[in-house]
Image 1: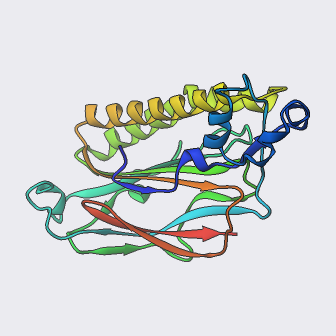
Image 2: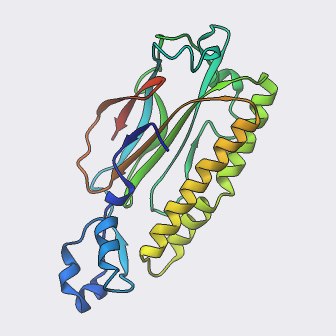
Image 3: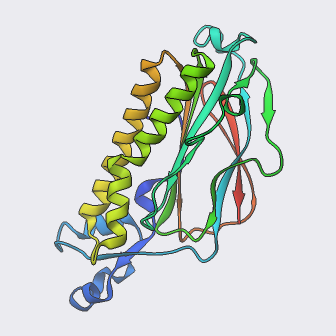
Length: 249
């Protein structure tokens, strides 16, 4: 479970299709995944169409800060010789595969960040682009994991390749691609995406633990397509870190 969480998957933007409304006009006011799921208890199934954002939107990581007071829990992390890194995968319901960071071909030197407790690491400009701005379908889901590396540079590179391949071949990537080809979407599709997203998170965590890396924090964010969106920063604090994200337009 994420220690830092923004929004909810259930609030992603969708509505019943016009054909469904012909049979059940009462469901016309339902505008989120959770509302449509409730309706499906009486109306099986409810054909769904996803709403798109009025403007492009994306996210970048502007800064990371390691917090004071966790030396006992993360004693080795705050040794100046240790290095932290973050992973990110983000997606919407457009049918496109998840956008991942750092991805294949990333140089370990560009990913590993030497840090001490209380130190703020800021990235140039708006920050490191995690999800380039584009029109969003249903909503933008993003997951960021912060880890401390106990590996050599070579082993770290191998782990990043394995992680990238895991995302590309995951059930989440497969289900999202099927959405683009589907002639109709129901609540079962939404459930399949949520399940696949959870399984991918477990798989990534297992790979990194197997490589003896130490977990620091996990951020999970959900941004519905129908919500208002403007450029700016937002800061979130977890048990051992603080991150600032920049909203891109």
